[in-house]
Image (tube, rainbow, N blue to C red; front, side, top):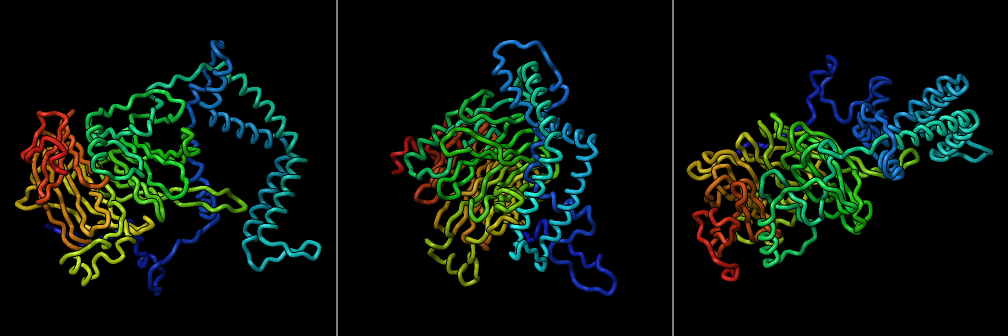
Length: 546
């Protein structure tokens, strides 16, 4: 098996060549702003990342200006239009206020002076040597900010208040008239409302794949078997329909969805969805159990979203997205908490890291399940790992496996926070070249193996090959433990929650379920379509394995 030396992807560039002559070394840390424009861009960067996605919800102005005679329920019509065109209304109000201020010289002068005062104040307020006293009492940084805010509010109310209320009253009347006269927006394919049921969310990368199962379900062999059979007998067509409980929107067909793991306590459920147009959205239930979902972040990746999955929630929640563009970009979104401050409310942001992964597109990805790798470890493999330092600090790293159109299976290594990533190695071949000759790898799945030091990755290919790669401990070589073929095109592969069963979807409507025997071989225990069989021996019922 060929093994690549670790190469850090996305690391900082060596800037030694760009330093002045006679100066040695490399640039370290964040590059400071070189001019006022860069300083302004840096200042508005967090706000652009947090609020910039609202502009993507702007509706076409051609649709906005269509008016007609009111028909049907006027109240419902007004309510739908106010929700549908809310970003358009906000843009119009901002432009109207700006025009009103520009046309009023006194308002324009006051706003300009206040803007200059605030720019100077924000820069000076960070100076620790600046001291301000009122009546002999020194004011701290936050107190100075509050005093200037109060003065600004009073000045705006006295000078701009009349202009603001006049503009707002005129704007409210216009919005009311538009909401009544505009026809109710049609929610067609361009803005389909997709019904996401908490127990039937499915990935639609292939006609028959595993559903996104919520976290927190206790593993049980019998329930696993029932859940898998239930999953295998359900079709994955997610119809466009409306729901009062949980409805969300995408402009194109949704190809995959994924649940986020719980973050501890009474955290609200979080869900990610990816569409054929590259749109990725992260949704969260406003209150646990309310059934009302809101979008907390969205972005676009090049090409269709072929796969996405959340990693461990601690210390940072990380979402991996595999896109189907020619570059085969692996995108990692890292959640960051924003602490409350005098200038902003508490919230969250998502940092984006893009890594070139597979030429022709990423087909599938899978996280290594979290666990303590050596707590139940025994045997010679663990002894070799301990003597060489292998596996130490394993809980401080994240691992991810991807496959793509280039036929390769890559293992990625990242730090615990999900901020630094490198390509650890690729799994290129097996005994007698069985994997390299098997065609395109369609799916990968990392086996849940809690408490054990070994790792197992299952793959399936378009030629029907199913192979299991095994690593005894982190740092040791990967080897093909076993492989077999199913009759037909293997579309998707998935493990049961405890790793005791392996399901493979085949062709358009077939699926096969396997279980590991006491001798380590994998035997077929059930299939949805009896015409889909494999060379593995078949048991008639689960009871024979108990």
